[in-house]
Length: 546
Image 1: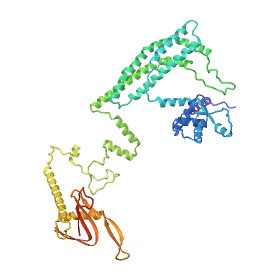
Image 2: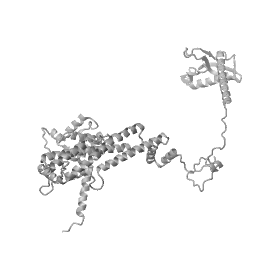
Image 3: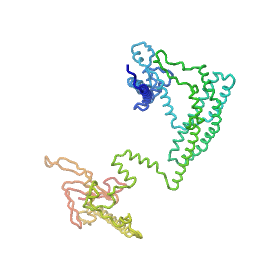
Image 4: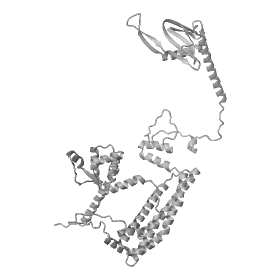
């Protein structure tokens, strides 16, 4: 028989410890799974009752009563979720006997589940984090006075002749550690919140004023209370310390609690027991180490004093930042962090573009001097072989292309603006005269000779009308197989000039327009020109001419 290799037992124990740690950590998986909201609702349904032993129909009923994301689950999906929680270690399959009056009821109720201790603890902690994680917890400062009083009374009773009654001692120890644990937890939570806030560099003046008062008043009251009572509590603990082992032995003899759960038979049944606070010597060592330096690493009171000093330093740093911002030296930490996040998430080419936009730092080949117009240099061309760009003397010597010397006066363009306004008024007057000429020539185009401006305006309106026209197709009466087109809604107008032109197609019509630039002949078209009026409908005031 071979002897085990040296260290094999230690390696096996380490592997068992790692496996146990992985098993416990797996129980947190449901909080980060994609269906975490449904898992939370299911676990809350089990945590709502002590020793809950529920079947799938029972869980469905509770989920629908509570509402939320899991209210719409069906029985099959819920069974999958429950089995997954069993694999993670949050639930256990129940071994209770099922009483059913029918096969259908048995099939629905045979799969029953109950909470594991680890699952109940994790769910309780998760609900606490979701409910109060970001809240500022008040410090239970009054509990420190109760801890001092309880220690003094316990020390007097323990050191008295005959010692303390076991039941009285058990009650006092339990009360003492409940008070101390609540006080220590409130201190830890409050300073964690305080550090989270003071680590910010974006406090405005109102927030800064509030936290300044908080530090100067509330934190000062806490530290003064702790500094006042810590030496007195340490002195009482020094007096009580030699009697602690005997006190714990006497309490264990009076009330064993769950310590009777020990390995039985062949040792395969092993139950770990977590004693109540104050029933183990390590609990008293932790209480003593909170107020006194017992291991050379400083007490919790010293750490509290250091944390208060760091909080004051953070407050002063924020005060300096706000003073700098008032003088124009604004901290850009938030902007730089945002820019760093953009760089981290960007593709390489996008990162180059962000750097150019943020800092104005271009590549060395982009000096702002345009190359020759007939010369295109690719970006991959090396400087050694690329063409040379002539750099102006001013840029080469001074680093700037700005002209030196006195700046010239601003040129006065008021005369040019006046000429442009006069020209615009003349053009507007000419168009208005042309419109009046067209309206006066209505019905007498064959007898009138239009000016160039009037003919140009008429052609402009005619082109717009024909562009807006809608063609209507119909069979010709004269011959079979031919098609003719009519103009429909061929109309244009100029609201500024108050003129409207309507074009109609009339077979055999002949319209001749005489002007200084020549004659214009329009076959099969009839022109109607009228004045636009807000009090008339379309067609009112129009005069027809052909």
